[in-house]
Length: 238
Image (cartoon, rainbow, N blue to C red; front, side, top):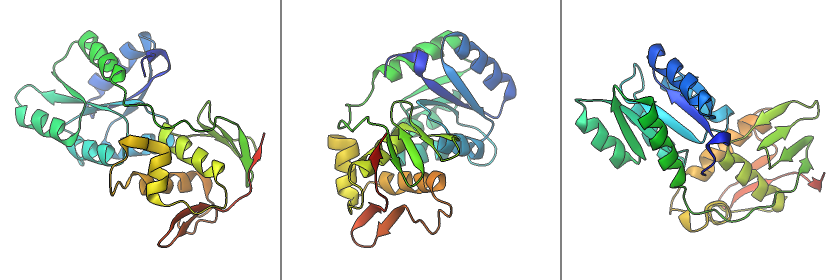
């Protein structure tokens, strides 16, 4: 991704005097921003919104930034730029080893951070396999791939992450068909797929929270034990 005008940034920092001025600055540069004061708040935003990059403070009360970074990398989440204190060289090294894409030392120049954001976005991973961009209906829902949205029967819109939208598109391409984890990885990540990757399970869990009346007893995205997952619905083009 190179067009920062359509990029949404999540700023995670417990210091209000850092996250709010930074969000204001990035908005003036044409980026959309969301804010979170803790890792717990960040997890909620990441489940609800389509986030393209996370600016993540390392030192926070409760769950720290390194723990959240590890979780984001494990689930194939958006790229991460860490904010670290000048003396915390160990945190910077550990963060990069965990899979962070870059780091910026506090106090920082917002212009430098913006340059690093653009550099990370330019280093986009190889494009995943092409999936169908057709708008389709299923079980009272309408999926809009172009805007990564779900619309229910009442017209309420729910935003999906890029990974959630891509995975849902694969299921809509193969309704009432059991798809194994490896098959789903092949269709969504291609050569970037990793053996024993849990990203599929995590993404399905998030989709269930948005699609199902009772995510613990799913009726749409059904688990086929020993086989994989199945979309238990008929699909039609809009």
